[in-house]
Length: 108
Length: 118
Image (tube, each protein chain N blue to C red):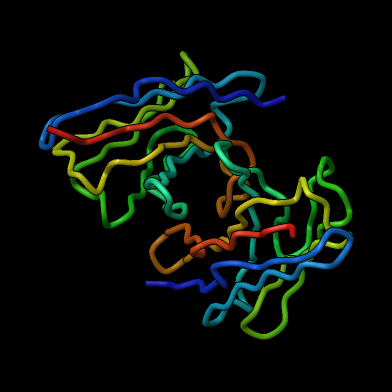
């Protein structure tokens, strides 16, 4: 089955830039989606199809992809960005939706 | 603004059944695929099942295939997940989610906790 690998944790100081990666075989041919989940809350979509941002998401969050790695970048990190972040793709061989294991972003 | 309000969680004994519901409002429910996604305590997200807009097609994760059934009532704008033969590893917060483009999710319910315990 398709596997997406994320670092378990990323730490960054306020005002700095956080980069969260998502590695997967053939991820270059997949649209990668990103979700933010704050403690005790439901996930919220922050990036669709590698880099499309819903209108309600601030432009400090952006997505990109290179080779087999997708990256969620959060610029000018704020305390309110502290959350778990999950990448997700569609596995069209079996119609599965696959999530990465998640990355906990800590704002120092 | 899309609204998905869930109900039906609780404590269930191993081997028994439980049905979750998700009432949709403020969008054309019958036009969208819908999903169930779960999250075990302290763990990541796991896609569980998807159903087509008319209920004619359903897909399941291997972990629940043959035990869980996703269904919908487009008149009542409600999505269901019938869980049978539950196991300890089914303990999780279950979310309903609206499909985006057949590949992802753009709106989520509030989640309900299912605890499998004797």
